[in-house]
Image (tube, rainbow, N blue to C red; front, side):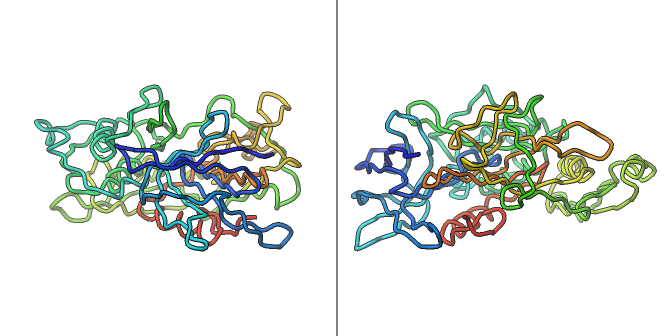
Length: 403
C-alpha cells in the first residue's frame, strides 16, 4: 500500500511557525511510526535505509528538508489530511550530500525532560495542601507544555493523595514517573498519552490501563514464533509484596505485606508462595503503599507477553468478526485477544495490551509488543532507549532487530 504523505516542520511550540513542507510517498520513502500505551505518539522515523531480501536500499525523503529546527513541531499527514504522527524533531537528522534526507521525531512526552516543576507557581496558595494525582499532573503539563490541551473526555484522576510541594524542583519526567508508577486508588496502572488534536493541537489523555469489556482485535495463536511469540516467566509471580520507601527527612521504612502473610489465596490458586520487597526511593507512606498495592495486583498473575507480527498474510481481525484491520490504524494502548490463551481452569480469553505498535509503511506491516500488565519504564531512560533503537534499527522495548 502506497501512502502519499507530507512532513510539516515548524519552529518549536508554542509559536510553531510553519517551515517548508516536504512531500513523499511510501514505499519509495521509508516511514516507521511507533505508538505506545505509555505515551501515545511515541516516535517517527522518515527516510532511513531499509532491508529488502537481505539487501540494504536507500529510502530517503525524495525532497531534501530545506528548513529544519531542532525540537521543532512536526506533523506527518496523508494527502487527504489524516494525521499519522505529531511530535517534535528530537534527534539529529541525517545529512546526505550536505542536505537533510532523514528525520527522527519523538512524541511530546519527551518534553518533560526539558524543565522543572515549580509547585508555588502552579498552586500559588495551595502548594502545601493535599490534592490528588490528576490535578498535579494537569499542572505539570500546563506549566511545562503550554501548547498542550487536556482531553477531558479521556482524563481520569488516579486519586492518590499528595501535596504539590512533594514534587517541587523535580523535572517533569520525575514527577510524571513517580505519580504514574504508583497507579491509582483503584489498583490500576495509568498512562499519560499524547495524541493529535484539531488544528495541530496536542491533546493529552490520562487513562487507566484496564481492558475493555470487548477487546478491539483478535488473532489466532498460530504455531509460528515469527508471527506470534508469547511466553511468561514464573519468576515474575509473587504471592506477597511489600515496598521500602524513604519519607522526606526520614529513614528507610518498609510497608506491611500485601496481602497479609496469613492470606493463602495465591497459594491455593498457583501452588507456591513467593515474597518480594520493592524499592520506591523517596516517597510518602501513602505513595509507597499505593505503589505496593498496584504492583501486587500485577505480580499475582502470569505475566503473559511477547510479540505479534502483523502483515497482509497474517492480519489482525476486529474482535467482533472476521473483518481484517487496516494495519496503519492499529495503535499502542489498544487490546487484542489471542485465541487459545487463557489461565488454567478458565475458558475466558486473556486480553493483552498492545504496549507498542511499530508500523512500517514501506512493507505495510506492524510489530506489536503485547503484555498483560508490564510495569512502566521511566521517561528519562525512555529518551535514550528510543533514540538508540531508532539509530540501530531495533525494537526499543525488546532490543531485537526490526524486520
